[in-house]
Length: 113
Length: 115
Image (cartoon, rainbow over all chains, first blue to last red; front, side):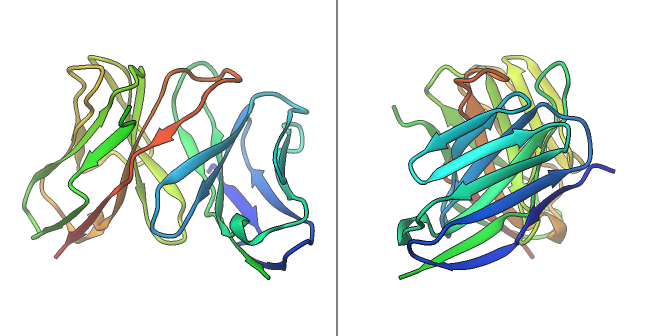
C-alpha cells in the first residue's frame, strides 16, 4: 500500500530559526510536489521536483528530492511569521502519464514572533 | 484571468440528494482534477481529465461522476449524497505535467455538508 508520510505533523518554531520538514513515501516515484495551504484557503503550488537530486529554492524555502531514499525535504531558513501555514508534499506514482498523485497528511507550521 | 473558479462555495445536502459541483478555468489548461480534503488526511484524488472528452478515476472515485465536454469546464456530480462525502472539494488545473514549468492551480474550494 502506498504511503506518504510527513514529519513532523505539527511544528512550532521561533522566528529566525531553521527547520526541516520531511516527506517519506513508500513506492517508486520520480515526481514530487510541495504545496502550501493557509487556514480556510486553497492550495498554492510551491515546488515541482522531477528527478533524483533535484533542489529548488524560493525565498526562505528550499526543497530537495532523493528518489533512492524515497525522501524529500523542505528546509526553512530564518523563519518568519508569514510562513505559518500547512505544507503538503504529494507524490506522483504514475510512470508514464498523469495518474495518481498521493498527498501526505500535511505539516502544520506555526512561526512564533 | 479568473484562474480556477468553483461554485457553490458552500452547500448543505440531505442524504440521497444529488448535485453537481462546478469547476471552470480560463487558462486553456489541458489537465484538470478533483480532490477532496478531509481533516488530517491531506487531499485525495477523485477524478481527473487530460483533455476534453478524456477522464479517468483517481484514488477515491466511488459515488462521483465527471465529464469533460469542453476544455474549460470539469463538473463533479454526486449521484446520491452520503454523510461520508462531507468534505471540502478542490478543483485544480495545470497546463503541463512532468516538466519543470509545471504548476497546478487550485480553485477556492467547495465546502459540502451532507446530513
